[in-house]
Amino acid sequence: LDIIVQTFEKDQTMKTMKPICGSICLIAASPNGIEKLTSYADRILHRLCDILKQNTKDIDNSYLFRYLWTLRMLLEKNIVSPESNECEDIAPYLAIIFSTPDPRNILLSISIFILIPNTILQSLNSIQYALQDKNFEDHIINGFAQLISLGAEHDISQVEKALISLVESEYAKGARQESNEITQNIAYVIGFVSGQYQDIREKLLQDFEQKIVNPTNLATLPFALKCVGEIGALIDLSDKTQLIDSVFQLIGHSNREVFNAAAECIGLLATG
Image 1: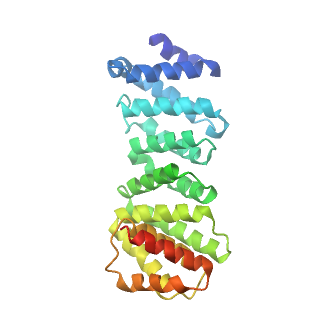
Image 2: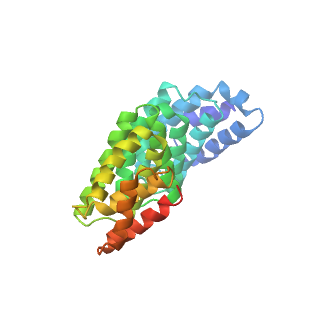
Image 3: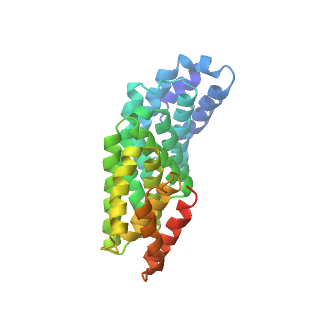
């Protein structure tokens, strides 16, 4: 083990990194692995952080996967402390991975943030950018939603501002007739987080209700309906009678996009 760690610290050749990271993960997963690795934990973490503090977009995806997997294993097994300064310092570099192409690495980065929750707020801007830039698969969108929700446990006002920013961005896209698959992903995230926090939910619902009950701007209606549906899938909104009645009225709307959004909204509300 001493030779493995020394090689990991000193060897700059990439070809040695995969087997070394694999060996560390195997040891960590073994019955006595935690005891064996504890005395080396700081050295391994320091080396991993040095590597990840490089431009992560320039690291080969397969190598980046090994580095992230190793870091996750060390955190998961409590071999390194999630409250260490190095874990906090590495957070901005982990957040950059949200905009890289390999979904495996994005999921690993999300799982690492979940294990170091005190750093999640540092990732909010990167999550916003990623959500608005790319159409991700459902499990990644769900991971982003979980991260944002966990971030609210540390600073709900900061998360609320981030969600409002996403909403306003989607309204602007609607006005430019640029809504796409990404719009539904963002509506899901809005609904997921709002379902966990009443203060956020009530503030956003007030805005959505205003858009739906008094539909003066057709450009904002579809997104507001999608968000209400996602919230209603998690929380019973039957007490919002005026809002619900207005959604049903929009089923007869001549605008196809509004009609479709209203129909989907009713379907989701029925499950809440």
